[in-house]
Each structure stands twice: as structure tokens, then as C-alpha cells.
Image (cartoon, rainbow, N blue to C red; front, side):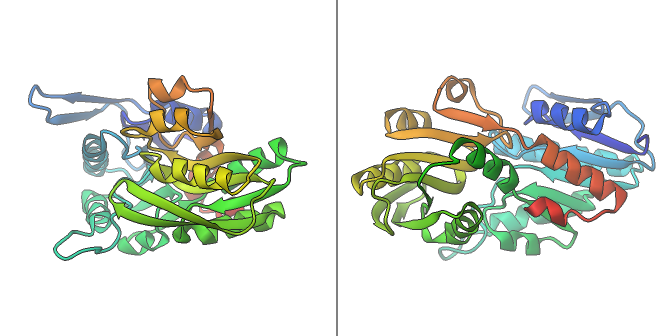
Length: 313
């Protein structure tokens, strides 16, 4: 496939390598350095003229550096006459700021969408957007993949004979949890949550029966793990036999690792949309599933012009 090229920023080189192994192509050469004041400099080593270029970059911590890297790489490919540029963003930073929640605040997810479009991206491939309507912020095609096939496969293999209940940690995640419960023929429950301020939430009660059940909390991301660990406490209090959690994006910032260690959570299953830091990787409770084949197949089908509908489970 000489007409396709995959490049990676600094945010997730391990995932990029796995994707290229799946595609059986080498990872493109790019040099990313910084001036002494922190200004980022990009230099592409490979010829990309008239090639279909895919740039992989999760806009995770450090969010702003990774975002600027992505924008500058896209611009470099545009000025190098690439035939098409696709931004592959396994984790879309700023996705939680998708609407006005108070007077005089930005819709940051829309600003990022504008930046990607203006910089020269022709298409975006992302995964488990925090809010599906973010796709509408773009004037270019967006493929929002789901980690569901990977997570469902793991649950079926490891909880085949268990009495399962799928848990939504808040009202916003009910649709996702319901879809999983239906495919697993499991029960559904909801944790009633009231958010006090950013990164702080108070779990209040459980809607549904979890007594003597294996509860599986399903969410799109775990950031400070406040919502997650409070949900675990409430579920255990309501009689759950054990509690596991699954999320696509292991942001795991601030006190997240301490909270997970101290909680009754049996396991936290995440994907490699964001690489784990050393502290998180050292915890036995956390297991990482790769989405490399899923993203790689989406890249391949996008390049060939094939449908990716079957990747959505």
C-alpha cells in the first residue's frame, strides 16, 4: 500500500506502532522537537505527495501540547501536497466542553473542531466521543468508532457464567449501558449522581437491583475517578457481590490512582486510546485492552472507500 502513510505524534506512539503492524506498513518518519521556550517544531521526513495520510494523535495530557502537535503536523502534510489528510484521534480532548453550562463560557469542543478543519484535515476518525453531537461541530466527515466490540469480547470471555448487571454511573450514560446490557442479556441499573463542581461528584442512590449481582460500571472515561469510586461504594452498600468497571479513555488525573487503590473496585478495564503513566501501569487492578486492530481496520476501509458500519458492533 504505497499510497497510504501513517504518522504519529508524541502522545501515543505504542498504539501507532501496533496499528502499523496490523496494516503491515512502516510508521512514517517525523521529527518533533521544541525550542527552549516550548515552541513546537515539526519536520516530516517522508515524501507524502499525493498520498493518503493518517495522523494519529490522542489529545491527552499534556493536552495543549498534543493538540498543537497535531495541528502543525496536519498543516505540514497539507503544504506537502498530501492527497487527503485524516486526523486519527483515539481520545478527543476538550470533548467534555460540548455545550454552554454557564453564561460567558466557550464551547471548547467546537473550537477544537474548527482548528482541525482550518489546519487542513479532510476527515476525522475518533473513538467514543463524550457526546455524539460533537460530530456535528465539524464540516468534514467524522467516523466515531466505539470500543464496544473489544470490551464486549472481554466481558463474554471473563464473565460468561456470572449474574451480571450493567451499571450506568449517571443519567448521561444510560443509552450506552442499555446497549451493552442488551447484547450481554444482563440487567441494567443506574447510579443517581449530583455533580457539585468540575471533577467532583456525589453519588446518591442506585436505581435498579444489584443485590448479589456482579456489577459492571460502564463509562466513556475515568478522569479523577471520583464518580467511579463513589459509584463503587454505593453499589457495595446496596449489596453488589463485586464491582468491576470498564472505560474507553483512562485519563486518570489528579487523585485517580489513589482513589482506585483505596476503593472496593475489583478491576478497571481500559483501552489504549491513552497510554497509562507509570503509576497507573503498576496497579494490578488496571488492565489494558488494545483498540489497534479496530482503528487499523477503520483506516484501511477509509482508504479503500469501504463501509465501516460493521465496526460499530
